[in-house]
Length: 367
Image 1 (spheres, one colour):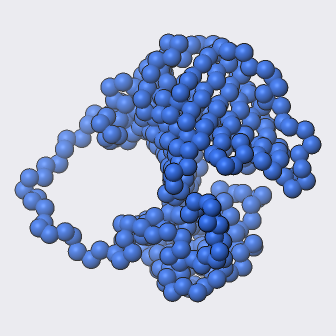
Image 2 (cartoon, helix red, strand yellow; image 1 turned 90 degrees about the vertical axis):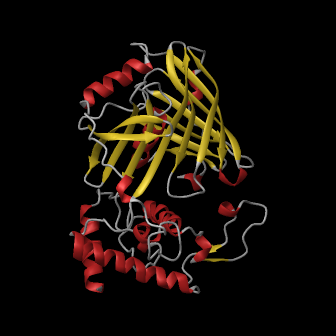
Image 3 (cartoon, one colour; image 1 turned 60 degrees about the vertical axis):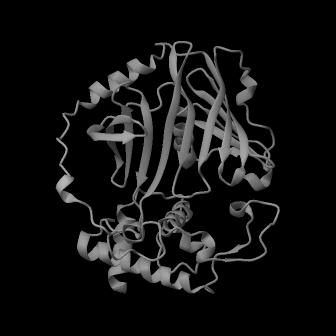
């Protein structure tokens, strides 16, 4: 089995998108025994997805010493990740090896089986379906819907948003930002022209944090100082910023309509686009109104798929453009869910160029 696990991890590493600037997490964390090829940026999202699959928190497997009692559970710190005191952590390693072995032997190293496949949000996997059984005589196969081409859905979306051909010279959006564990803050997004945007968020008691894009570069700033964006951060920051424009996505070249699903109380066309061999994006467009209701990114990893989702709700017309006044973001961690409700959206207001300048003399620790 161990040989099969090693082969699986080697295949996963070979198929994953190249990230030369990010070595495996095992270099910094020598006690990693199974997920030795996983990059650091995927490690904690992967752990969160596993915990969510079992309906547990991090302390189910990991040791925590002297957390800060003044902070919320997820921010209190005190974790000693490399300690193996708890039996569930040792069991989890065996279960990871089992999942990797099943996928290698039965599915050609495709990640078909995951922790959630069996656990479904419970520590003990279910063995039986619920009783009494379903009445299969009342179940009818719904007729397959006639699906439009993606171009038809995309054009309906653009018409529904009704963004002016020349856009707006500036846009300033302000929102409340409500997070899990009773954390509440604010968000401001400022656009100027076609290539400048600044996002500033604050969740007290932390100092404000900003991300700024200027052309193909940009910078980030927080209470500890400021620094230029790394190349691997610019694409992610650009995607985040684009969500606050009237048209939320760039038109994908290879999208296709794959079905109709329910999003809340609305029927939605489901469009899928392959970003790379291990990443796909799925969009849900309102069948009746044409507007974008949901955006989901799925990234395959060595063990579990990682998902990020944005829901767009409460569309209103502002200066002739349809804009969502509520955005809900979530991923595999219960601590990362946020609801951003916009209190004002203003177009063509005065925005000074200094808004996009990086603070001078970034401290050495922020390099």
